[in-house]
Length: 92
Image (cartoon, rainbow, N blue to C red; front, side, top):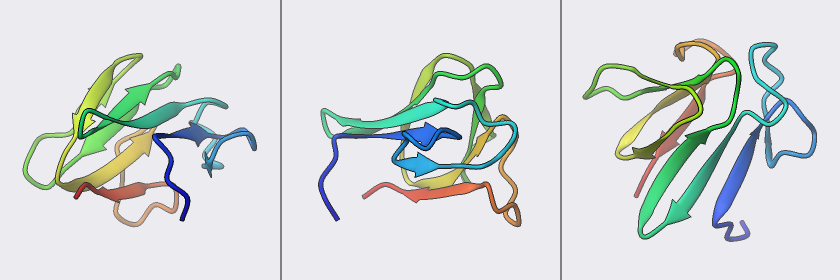
């Protein structure tokens, strides 16, 4: 895998991670690696939800948040363990 300081997420085929969810924007979000942290940046109309096992779900709308540990990301909705559009992550 090639090192990338950031990854784009959304419905458009120009993204590195394409999510075909109708609730996802064409250019929905980014994950950036900066200063030793992973930052989730929402750029959408419907928002992004970060859900970790050790915290309440956090909704972002045109804002950013430092990811830590492991969790799930939902584009435009709360992530569901059984939803094919849920993004799972683990920061190391």
